[in-house]
Every structure is written in C-alpha cells, then in structure tokens.
Length: 266
Image 1 (tube, rainbow, N blue to C red):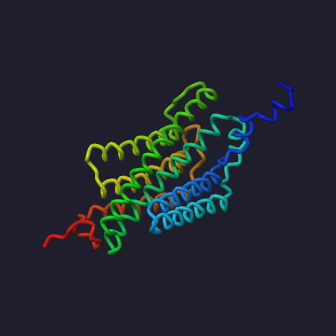
Image 2 (cartoon, rainbow, N blue to C red):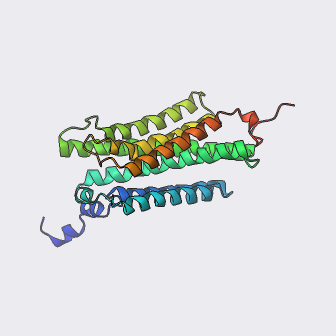
Image 3 (cartoon, one colour):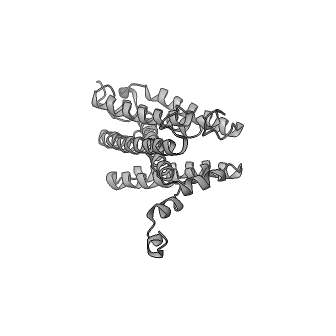
C-alpha cells in the first residue's frame, strides 16, 4: 500500500530496523544489558546485595568481551543488512540472546554460590536456599527464551534457506543450550540434583553457552562460521578451564564447606 498512514504503522519494519543485535559486538553489549537487568531483578527479590554483585560482574565481563571484539575489528558488519531486513531473524537473534544472558547469569550465580560456600563463612542456610531457588527460576526463564529463539531461527532458515533445520554447528549449539537447561530442570524435578547440584549444572551452562556463542563460530564450517582467531580461542579456553575448576571445587561435600550450609556433625 502506498498510503503514508499505512507506511507509518509498519510495525514489522520498525522492529527489524530497531533490532538491538546486529553483529557479534552488539550481541555482547545486549547480553550484558540483559544480564544486568536480570541481576537487578534478583536483587529486588533477595534484597541483600547478591543480585547487585551479579549484575556488576556480568555487565563488566560482557563489556570486556565487547571491547576485545571491537578492538579486533570483529564487529560483523556484514550481518547488519540481513538482521535489519528480516523480521524472523531479528526476533530470533534478540530472543535467543536473552536466553544466552539468562543462562550465563544462572551460571555465574552458581559460581559465586560455590566460592562463597567453600571459601567463606557468609553463605548462611537461608541465603543458600534463596540463591538456589533463584538459579532454578532463571534457568526456567533461560529455557523458555532459548527454545523460542531456536524455533524462530528455524522459521527464518525455512524462509531463507528452504529448510527448518540443517544440523549446522550454530544450530546445534543453540539446541545444546536448550537441552542443557532442560536437563537442569528435570534433574531438579527428579531429585537427582538439589541445591549444590543445580549450582554445578548451572556453571556447566556457562561452558555450554560460551561454546555455542563463540566456539562453534570458529570451527570454519557451516553457514554461521565467522573464522578462527587465536585470541578468541585462548579466551574461550581459559573461560572453560576456570569454570571446570570451580565445578571440581564444588564437588567438595557440603559439610566440608566453610559456610554452615548444613549442620556439622559433632
């Protein structure tokens, strides 16, 4: 329609043109914003400073990632035209990036919980229960957005490439995040993992998300390949190693932690 009134209310055009994620650099910024807002939501619930610490930590780390991406020139400008002109891809990238943010926030909450419990006396049983409950809630939130974002990506792929799913490494990475979050929830529902187990699985979500976000892009195969870079590989490997070490620390029995999360045997 050539009517100027109709053109002024083209919501699809407005949405695609205002997508907050248009390249790899902006995805890091957007992940940071989402994690900060979710962290403030945690603070609103707990009201003890923990959520503020989470918001500050995740925001700071995401800005470091964004700075390194911008410094290397890896801002992925070639993606902008596609993201700004396709409704399904714009909504897919935005939604699934929110899922990344929530999964990472849950992982960092688990990380801080384990470090507080093992090395400090500040993790009281009541705080332990609250943080564990918040990790569970954020994982559920992450599962919802990761799943919806993956489905939206399939719809876009069907329209653009003629197939809903092609087992591309990036598609597999998105699916792994969905499956991992589902595993965490089912482990909790089935009683396989409780407070400590949920925290350790959430830390594992950091590894899964980092690999799905950056690792699969450096494989050099698939339609989402961005190319291998040594600096990104070193940073990714270091991040994974740190999280694996903290998971190992978290396997220390709770009655051996410095914080009194369980009653000590006389």
